[in-house]
Length: 252
Image 1: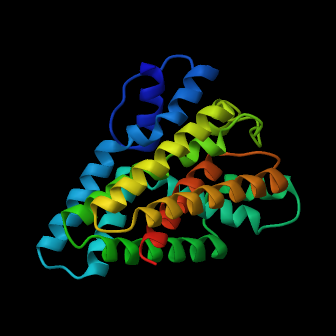
Image 2 (image 1 turned 45 degrees about the vertical axis):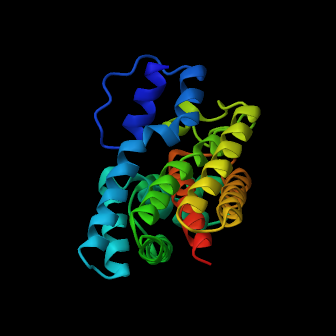
């Protein structure tokens, strides 16, 4: 379990996690399942940043941009890089080989740029709307943690890695379906509770969770059809999509 925690923390945050032993199937599954807990320090940090910015009198959009920037710094912007690479890969051609080649290159194409603008813009606006007080900041922090449950869906058993190297190989096809289902049920309850505590309807928290799960499931489906499996880039994209959908639904 310690190796699973180290793998999850080291992959998802800039927090030093120590040396990791051999990554077997059990360690990989554990790392993906506990991902929401692994980012708890990051969630607390950006929630506090948002609350302090709002308390200082900054406008909502500025608060949102600061939080988005904090999330990027705290995760090495790896998830955003994965989002851009995934969108570029999906839009690059008709073959899996071509898509994987584009995703591996690392440079950001026009489709990736547009995806980043849309996602970061939605995140900044939604965070600015939600962080009106400390409880709103708490809700955003909870969404940061809960969105990482996307990894349990991307790495569920039956979904292989799309290529023979990279992060996807280590963790793909590792999470039992029952564990993924329980993880998302817990997320639904937590989001409903956090929504209620922050003055929103518990139904909105539940709907935000369902919408995020559906969005990530569709991404996995498209990855299977286009790439034949998932990659580390797809996993990063899933996190960004889940977080964006969750907080956007909360302000509707």
